[in-house]
Amino acid sequence: MPSTANTFSFYYTENTVTPNFNQLQPVPNIRDLQNVLIGNPNLKAALSHIINLNYRHVDVSNGSALQIGITGNATRNQVVNNTVLVRDTLNSLKQETHYENTNGNYKVNSNYFWSLPLDKNKYNILINGMLGYDHRVFFSDQVKNFYKGINFHQSAGLRINQKWLMLNTNVSYSYRNNSYSLPTAVPNVIQTWLFNADVKTFILSTLSAAVTAVKTVNAGYSLPGANTLLIGAYVEKVFLKNKQISVKAEVNDLLNQANNLNRIIADNSITESRQISSAGISC
Image 1 (cartoon, rainbow, N blue to C red):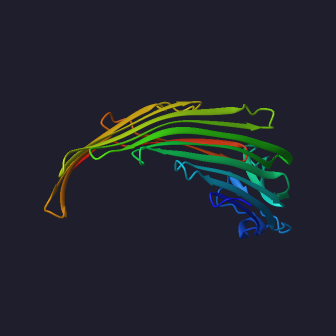
Image 2: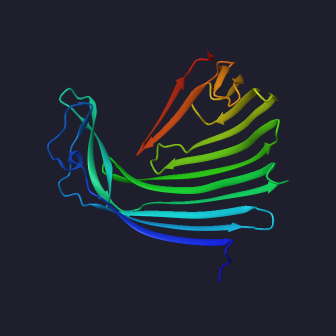
Image 3: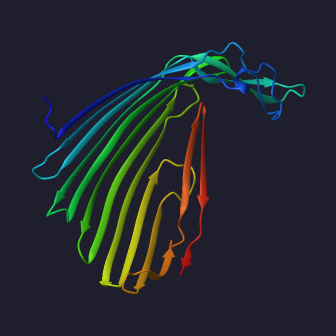
């Protein structure tokens, strides 16, 4: 019998998703003449099989905790796009999007988390990671194609809680590999290193200061400006015996390097976007 420090759980669920109106409507939707949508009234409902397995162990002697999880998802009759290039009356190319039922869509994800408290929880070591595989099916010009994605993430951190100091540091690495079966497609790999430090010190019982620094190093993006260093700080003073009133001076992104890189993968296309924000000072 498992001890009280060990917990196992297993779940199996089914989820049915019916096609929406646009996917079923056979009348062409010409709101966008460059991408005409044509539904398929013969579509079937998609059925997803989902399993989830988790294990958790707590060591009562030192307070450490370990959690491991595995999730799998396979879908039958998944509704996918079938993009077709056709020529219009002016002999220029435009895209038509049709819809098909297909099998072969599945994904598997695994993750773990481990923590170790030291010296009555004044120090805490945290390690976690995940590994996932995604397999999708789509059609291009009536030809069945495949997308394969591998995601890997690993991070380690240290937390310190003292009367006069709070420190949270973390370093992480992420790897994403996206590939297509299309002859013209080139495998794409994104790698990201993230270094984070958050320090708060209590100068007096009513006065505190904090500094946050986040360094990001990206590789694989086609957009420029992927590597950033974000630095912020604040000083806070509290008043009254119950500390109900406070005054805070704060500055964000001192080097004005903030951006938000985003990648969207849909069928046979990859879209990258970058949102830039400006530095700010508040009181």
